[in-house]
Length: 116
Image 1 (spheres, rainbow, N blue to C red):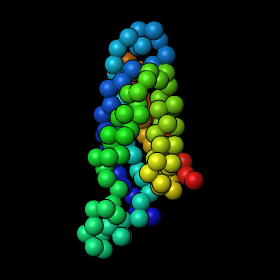
Image 2 (tube, rainbow, N blue to C red):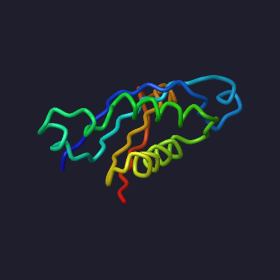
Image 3 (cartoon, helix red, strand yellow):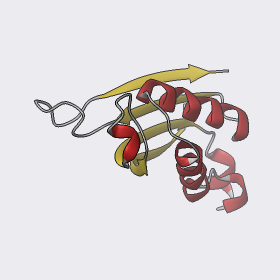
Image 4 (cartoon, one colour):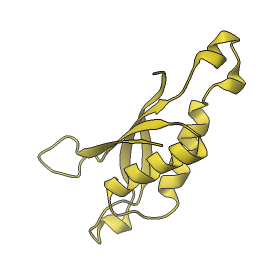
């Protein structure tokens, strides 16, 4: 299976369950693995057949910053559903990390895989 990869997408947004978290922006770090058949784009060096990393990244940032979200689990699901429906991919892996959320850990997060 071919994949398009986006690593370390940083999104500053309002995320969290505590009242103090709802008053500030925190950074999420997002990794995406997106099933995408790269053969057509590669065969003719044709950008129109490729999945545009910039377009995907901007859409995910817009999705996650549109309104406050409490759980990173919700963030992961929203991203997966967006990629499956709007970008017409058949499978995705989404990892959402929230650095600094737990004092004793460098990072905490969730990872999901979804398919149509």
